Amino acid sequence: MKINPAIFREYDIRGVVGKDYDEEFAYQLGRAFARLIKDKGGKKVSIGRDCRLSSPDLSQALIKGMVDSGLVVINLGIITTPMLYFSLFHLNTDGGIQVSGSHNPPDQNGFKICVGKETIWGEEIQKVRRIIEGEDYPSGKGSVREYELIGSYVDYILKNIRLKRPLKVVIDAGNGTAGPVAPKVLKGLGCELVELYCEMDGRFPNHHPDPTVLKNIEELRRRVVAEKAEVGFGYDGDSDRLGLVDERGEVIWGDIIMILLSRALLKEVPGAVIIGEVKCTHRLFNDIKSKGGRPIMWKAGHSLIKAKMKEVGAELGGEMSGHIF
Image 1 (tube, rainbow, N blue to C red):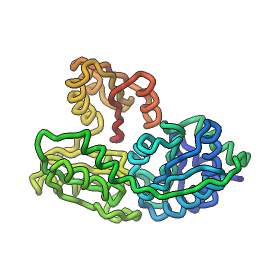
Image 2: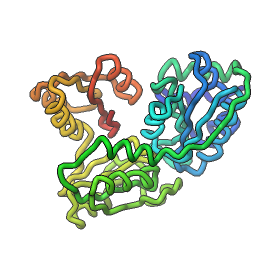
Image 3: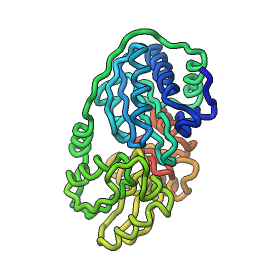
Image 4: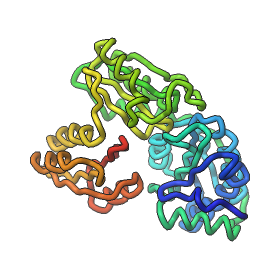
């Protein structure tokens, strides 16, 4: 199959739907993914998608390719990207794919790919390209079933997190996938909640779904102050990026979020290894060290950070982009 090599990025596959790739490509990707999974002795996989208008058709084509190649597919429907990662462990699957355009414009979409319990990147992404180009697909007849994950995901969080006291919180879901999930979690923790744009809409009509860009969280900042809230949370389209606003409406950037989290962590796990990416300020690494932690500066990219965390046994990792692990 002839494909556009430019859509194969360092950490995912991504492009403009209808221009860079289409549903036929998604079908072929499903078949190539089956090759990766079967080559490692796997068979069961989980598939999720975001709320973009192109995601249902891409997801269905992807699933058909997997089933036609002998995989047992658990279709999770619309979920956040962190929920897809959760499913790998909760459902003990051999891999998974999230159909998502993340924080990019509505006409774009993509695929975040996990083999085993890890996201693939770099050469493994290029391996997918070569499999598709050579049409080196396994045979077999698989199956698909639907599974409702949100209840298990919310329950897991609520069983493992307690607040010292309830907070008043403003959340801006940006019409993305955080809308059905974040309010359940925060209300379950006892928070008083003010909701902005929690209705999913893949056109993202109110603002671009990236909370790390100031103009996209202007209303969140105003509402935190107006509502006399203590904190504001902003999410990107697939809810794996976090934007944070304090009670004054000031933005707390990714490295400062990491400082706050690392200070709390080091009280419970003295000497913990904590990873920040190269764009974080030295203030983060100095603060971790001053509190008895072991800071590591590493390359940017969620797959690279997670791989390094596993390698060195880090308890926490994060990026300026708002990815926290």
